[in-house]
Length: 446
Image (cartoon, rainbow, N blue to C red):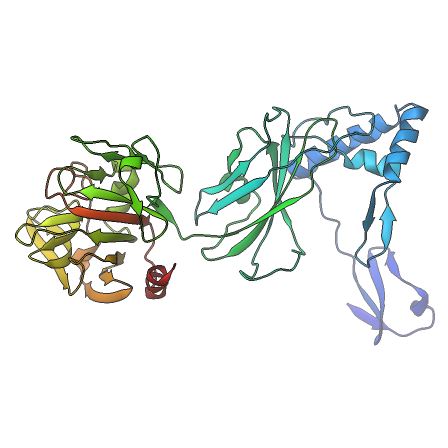
């Protein structure tokens, strides 16, 4: 790099012989010209081929078709970054109107301007979890065209209270709208976009059907949740036994052998929205192996959180609110006994049980209480109502707390007994150790 001040050099600007010239307040700046960036990624090659095809197609239009495109372009105005009104040419509008659902093929041969506008989604519920899934769940006008496509962009690191228009959008994907539920995690990762827990994002979608103008943009907002394996909100109130998983991947079934297992027979007012009632006779939700067992194995950090409202607990017998516990083996339990609520975490080390127990002042009373169990490396933490009540650090605490022969149940001991009467709400299994502030915020949330 060099500087010069001659009169001749002050009139030079640009590139010459591999050298870039630029005038600054301190004189002429000379530096080696940067090599041009190769535009040879698969995405760039595909886009270039599509635009090349479309440009050639323009040359085949009849004079009447060209006039129609110019007339259509004259009715569509936009503003540039300075706020000035501008209009596209007919050719530019023709090039812009592309339909490519796969980014790997040639656009449709749309030779005349559309006369109708695509109807976009009327709702878009975004659910994004650290490490996936990234769900876009959309309400679509019916019937949905099988040829309808959607392009998606993300605006990252937005303020949760912002009302300003997003300035920078990152393109994610274009794909067919059917099915109307998209797990777009793979597409985000393919574009180098890994969302962070707690990050607030904006999602913009534009849809288009063949021979129609694109829909107006639809923007929705979401906050990325920490990594989770299961989230049963327990708001279910329908004539099926399915308790829906907010992650969509692990719905569970309500069990009531001597009664009606449908959730509308057990729906009650909960701590958040609805909850499910357990009669203390044979009601429970026994989690499947896939929903919990892999995440409680040795050396796995986790967080379990859960709301429970005890109903007339029997003070003489243990009632297991949440449990895969066995005294001679490993497991966890939240239970009531003799009017006391307790949290137990038990390990089975070389044939010898190691049991961590904390009794709570409250919990056996008929009020909503929030429980959390966290493993953070060698440390076990137990919370009630947002307050840390017990902590223990020991190498043994890294051992497994799940088994392949005994599952966690809500409302009983692994679905085999010690049934607990009460209401359950908002069960969550995180695959990370949450911070104390997260637990407190969860308890205080309304």
